[in-house]
Length: 454
Image 1 (cartoon, rainbow, N blue to C red):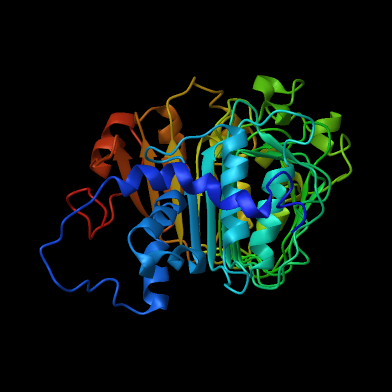
Image 2: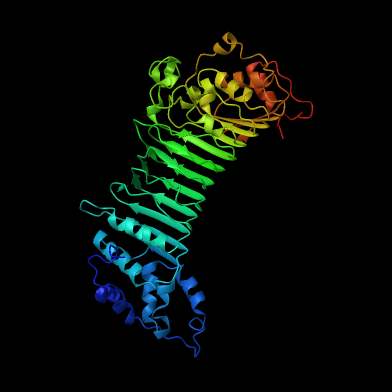
């Protein structure tokens, strides 16, 4: 508590609220009623109601009457946001939040703390105040904590790992992490971890309890792979990240996963059309500490629902992982985009052959340059594979144009007893139309005389 009150004499801390109080004392509202029903509510109910207000507005209620003088001190939910008219400099924010926490009732626990505002402090130790706020919230048994500190640069957090037996949900945005701050082994109740627009410079993200992990629009290290070790993980979103793809450790509890890399760090400069050449250090896994093995796919092998898409041209991390492709023993629904058919169908075939109980496949194809179309014949990919799941009965192909590439895919898939739906720009087109336009030797299923699949 000594750090919290630094520079803020206890006897004068309440004066920080005087400016707000004076303004609202002048605003008197005449209520045509003899009974104040709200003030008659129990203290616990009033504290719960105040928790829905931004903290600065909740504090202002102290001027309403003697009944309201101390109600804000017992709020179990604190929301300090920049929404509305409350805007202060970094120094003003430091003083307000520190006083807010200092003057609360020391015996009142916190359920939820939300810090969301523009914050651009100056000096050498710019993260000292936010670090104190966070640890104070955890000492007060906060179960949910959300920290979004926007600024010209991400605020650097290089502090010891968090410690809390009560924290269950943690949301972090616009922060820069270093050291071992993302080691959550001392937060045994943490189940939800969300990170958005963060810079992740740590060598590892670890937790034994997290069940839902979301990492969106974040940047990982460019020289060392971050390892993600979350053995209880059930739901993973790893979307639109930059830098080196993190290495996912295997877990058996994963149910759903959405992975979407967009980093130029994972490109092969040697292969044809920048696809995986299979011989350089990047493609063989000799460029990092995870040699000769999967980076992403190995940690996704237990998923039942899987969505794998790429956002950067030439991205090949998935194709590289296919050299050591695991068996997706529980996978039932699979969503893929252009990366699996970028040069030929080998990646698609590999994924199908390693998904023994797959039931539904969705392919989303964007517009792109025509690739070599003879490779499928060269590698014998147009022949029916006996290793493809016998449970696969539904394929949905989404595309902008039904071109030769789509035709090749349909010709391959037609060798199986599968219902194929074709969506062109969101509209389902008759299967017979595709067969006629491209001269495919395909048969329309007898139950589908209209050409539209159910």
